[in-house]
Figure 1: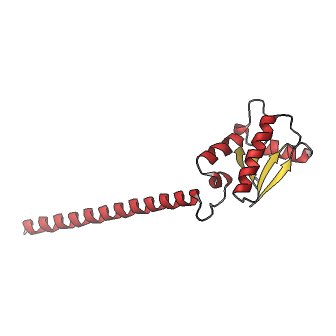
Figure 2: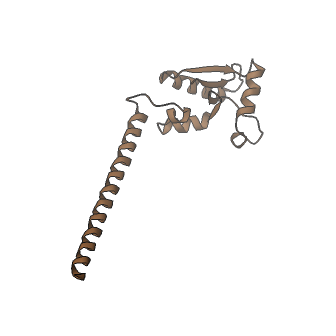
Figure 3: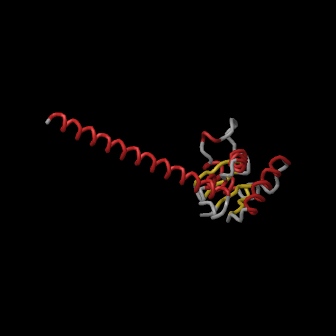
Amino acid sequence: MVIKVFLASSSGSTAIKKKQQDVVGFLEALKVDYTQLDIACNEDNRMWMRQNVPEDRKPTNGIPLPPQIFNEESYCGDYDTFFDAKEDNSVYSFLGLPPPPGSKQAHAEEEEGQEEEDLQSEEEEEAEVQEDEEEDLEETQEEEAE
């Protein structure tokens, strides 16, 4: 799976440039395999990006601005959703990638999985205790009936 980051190489907006640099820099720091696709010099890239950003995720003017992030053909989000994922230590989930072993996100998922296993074990134990109590009650009722 290749992450696609749609960028504008010749943007006049410093805000867009900073957002693009932030996304690319963070992906490089995580050693995520990604491809930069320029929408300023390549009309096909621009059209593909605009057509594949979901309608409910487009700004009110209907034209999404870079950076826009995809996992192959699947839309991940824009800078704001990327930033939120970064703040929540959930960038790998945001990108649709498995977290590498030892990462904060992998550790959090392991803990979450362990909590679910513990909860399931507790529920199974409670069900066994309830079954035992019901069997004891049935035996007591049978003895009293005799």
